[in-house]
Length: 171
Image (cartoon, rainbow, N blue to C red; front, side, top):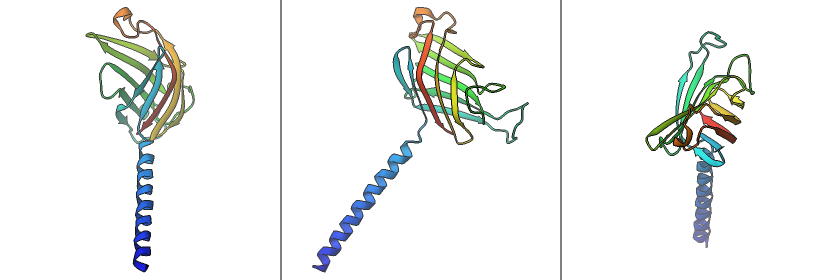
């Protein structure tokens, strides 16, 4: 009888250990970088990132501020690409300079490359809630028509509307 109880205790211990292990792996997946956004009415999820840090190690250096650049793709494809740069440390939707210098969307379809530019202060409207050396979190919603005459040759035409946008980047 003692051997049977010992076997039950070992099995219960293994079940508890396996359950905790799978919970831990789920928690790790929550820190994956992502950009979720609706562009012209269609939902997109960017999940492949290239982040380049330009951290000089000097705090509050107005001449050469710390910043990082981001390029985001969907499943590592090149048909729709988002890229932007961020000045490190600032939060909110504006300050005396620019948190996000330029928010760009590039499309490649039918051998036609089209670039949409969202430039500088108050455009695009992006609200940054976390911006440090570890992570960047923001929401955004705006329209730009800096498509450079892409017209019907682009999958988005001349105007791009971003709604319900959220950014999480694990730096």
